[in-house]
Length: 77
Image 1 (cartoon, rainbow, N blue to C red):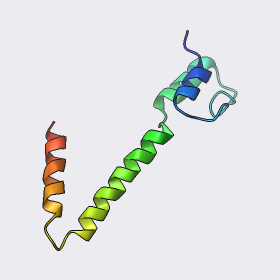
Image 2 (image 1 turned 90 degrees about the vertical axis):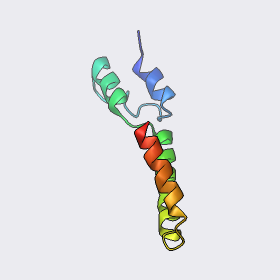
Image 3 (image 1 turned 30 degrees about the horizontal axis):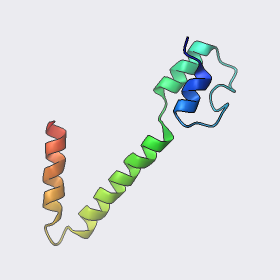
């Protein structure tokens, strides 16, 4: 049986972040399953900020065309 405390630990959350709430086990697992893993969110924001910096910094040089094309390839996959 899956323990909410184990899922909390796997996601890198502080102990009690969800399990400390007065919720039944199933509600805790649902909340954890629908939540965002902080490390993944931080990585995604870093990638988005890097892309934004390239787009803003390279808009005049045309170097952003390569990044935009690569983004289309990823979206197509």
